[in-house]
Length: 83
Image (tube, rainbow, N blue to C red; front, side):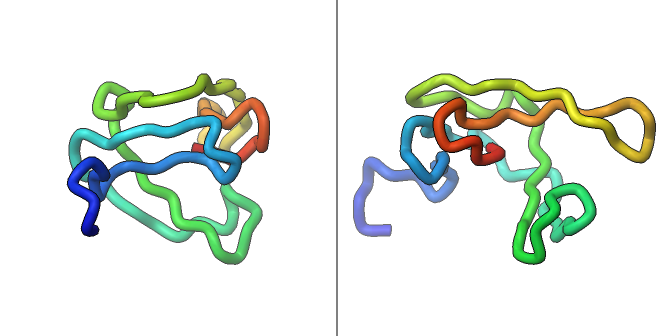
């Protein structure tokens, strides 16, 4: 990256309403078609306290899981992309 203001761990949604920065590397990254419903999705797992919200707000959605405990997914309230 040529822009020193942009971290390699910055990200966000497609509509750019939400921007975030990972302050550490993810615990793991995996391809998970079952959970995402997409043939081309990568999921990165990271502790919530290691993500800094730079811009916008998120909508947290509870979804079921095979474990029965469910999971919380943060989504952009505008474009609904999972963050």
